[in-house]
Amino acid sequence: MGILQWLFDARIELGNGQYLLWREVLGNLFGLLSALGGMRRKVWAWPLGIAGNLLLLTVFLGAVFGTPNPVNLLGQAGRQVMFILTSIYGWYRWRAAREHGGTAVEPRWASWGTRALLLAALVGGTALLTPIFQALGSYEPVWADAWIFMGSLLATYGMAKGWVEFWLIWVAVDLVGVPLLWSAGYYASAVMYVIYGVFTLSGFFVWWRVSARQGRERVLVETAHLDPTVTRR
Image 1 (cartoon, rainbow, N blue to C red):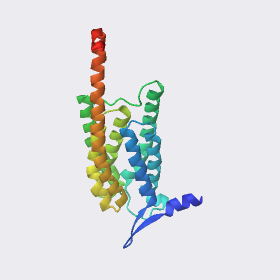
Image 2: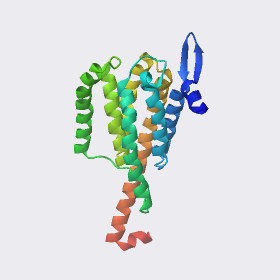
Image 3: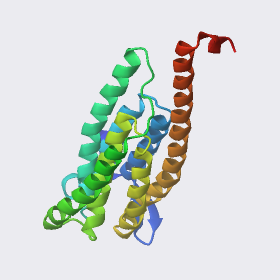
Image 4: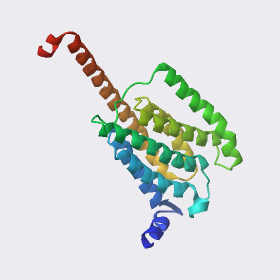
């Protein structure tokens, strides 16, 4: 109980009444490590991310868990719950693929139809959730909170499916998330979003190269079946 009490109360004093909660710092650190594991297609990325989500959930639901920051970010809190549920799906999917003798995930490009659906879901979901979050008293601009929620949902689902484009959805989330979190006083999360933005661009190119390499390997295998002499060249 002593450790839990310390975790809920511990903060880093910045002076002039400003501070960072250790829960916020650790939650974002776990999220960054999870993203690193995702880039390397490691199954442990999912449970580590869930641990970070649980910590951040206590931060953004300040009225419930005693966070001193009075600002309510319901989209940020809600997306932690969504992360946990979607991560359980991704964890199961990657483990199943690994247990069947393959890699955890095979990066591939989504079809144009899927891309259109992702974009429609991002814009439409943001429009739908904005008045709901506004009625619940979320921080302004509420559309930004809704955008972050929807983008995070789609990006996490895309990662579970192995779509290369999921990294670009994260970039779109980070571009909106940095100014929103900074203005709301969640400085640790805002700084981490900047780091995430750089990292997600790197992850996009890593998965792009992996997808291209796997495509070339499939072509060689298919060609070898048609012309057995290819394997001897």
